[in-house]
Amino acid sequence: MRSGTSKSVIAAAVALLLLTAACGGSKKDNKTAKSDASTSTTETTVAGETTTTAAGGSTTTAKKGSATTAKGSGTTSKPTQAGGAPAPATPGTYDYSQSGTSSLGTVPPNGTLVVDKANSSGVQVWHRATDPSQPTSDTTIAFRSDGPFITDSVQRASGQTVTCHFDKPVPAPPFPATDGKPISGHANCGQITVDVSGSITGHRTTQLDGQTIEVVVATVTLTTHGQVESTATQTEWWSPALRLTVHSESKVDGRFGAFPFSSNVTSDLKSGQPR
Image (cartoon, rainbow, N blue to C red; front, side, top):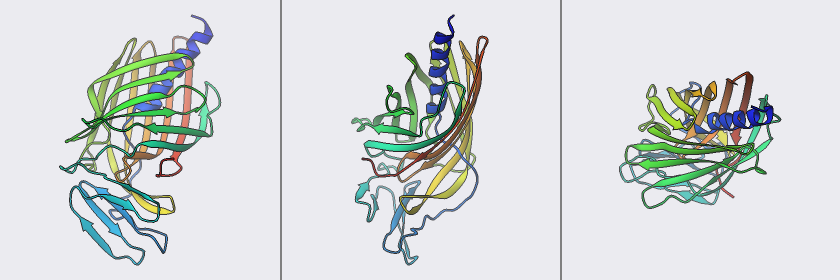
């Protein structure tokens, strides 16, 4: 096979590994997210409860089904379904900053995520572009009463397309998002199979839009077999209030025949407000 074709297949496999995992991260438990702005309040929803913290430190808690409003930011979202499970993310275009290295070329400094409006069954398609000048890679997420699950993905890179169906859908993340909950899944992607394994490793807080928000963190390992043999470790921080990944770290090592490849990429959500 020609090296150009090899590179195309590898690029599509790397896109698959970088964009499919559910969540990830490091450990630092902190159950309440506080605003660091003196004139604002924030609300964070975890497992169906919304905690509102004002600048002065006062806290109120609403039960399942309440809406989350980031006051002063101009957006309102409904983070949970009637049963408390996460609802689909707010539609729109989100921007990510990106850094790292790849044996396949330069990592673009900016990427995008376009989130479609969910259908009546709560199924939502996310379109991720690590290079906005190239076609997106798409992930289908079903927001069910027992939590969100990745069911399908279409990864595009260097003119190649890898289509996967997860016959064991991947929790994205497990619900309720308690420490130690497992994350697993399996997909058939033509000449490649993908297996996902990992768990939620804790909770922590991080800064976004000038506010402190809570995130669920976990570590996931993805392995491919078949046309491409590879292993990826992925760490992600998932925001229950946004239903989005706000930080991810992905390391991929693999081989396509005689061609080795690797990448080490970090992505960070620039704002929780879609444009």
